[in-house]
Image (cartoon, rainbow, N blue to C red):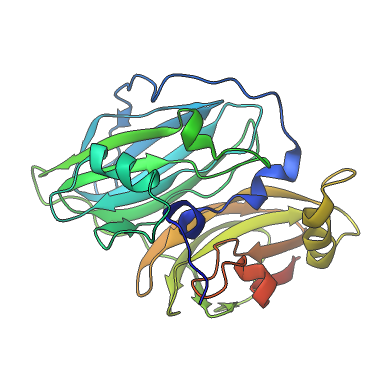
Length: 289
């Protein structure tokens, strides 16, 4: 069995190259945080907006527990995502930094909680999930053939505190996407329009769902082949999904679908051989009419 490091197990980086790279600039360990929590109509989840740029997050330092919708706005010239990590067992942000520097296996106290997956520059993605009080972090594991973005500053602590009141109910999904070792299953065909998709990991490993819109005439096979050399224009554009999600977990995201061809891809490295799950066949192409 291959040895998988913390970074290697958690990274979902290949998608980052889908729009090419700009020059990288080193920034401080992490950027200052700003409050950005919006109230929502009664019965709907509060919205937490997180802005990502090259290479920092602007995000709240703390948010109340409960059902929460995260909206990730990518204002950088590079592709970014927003992976949510939960630090259990009383562990702190300093402990997380130590774990990320450790070439050994990921600690058991570090949990992958999904979050808005990769969005192209100038666009946004979203994820809705339930959060319990505790210590968390948001992080970008994307790389462009170099160091992951968190090493350049895209990592921030997040404190979840007890909420006042009953909180919002979980929104309803009209489509379910099941993740397993190694494929995706949609509960029904996706038609043009806006859909809320419930992502449920039924597999034995951590998986993600990266949604990409394929360029006209291109296939998911073209996209995977392009990943191998990254020459020429990218045959797909990242438009969200759910970042790394541990077995048994569920999360929701919404997306607008226009007619065309799309694909679902999992880039999470395999726990056994370290190869991205798409190498094991974890891709699914579909058409929207």
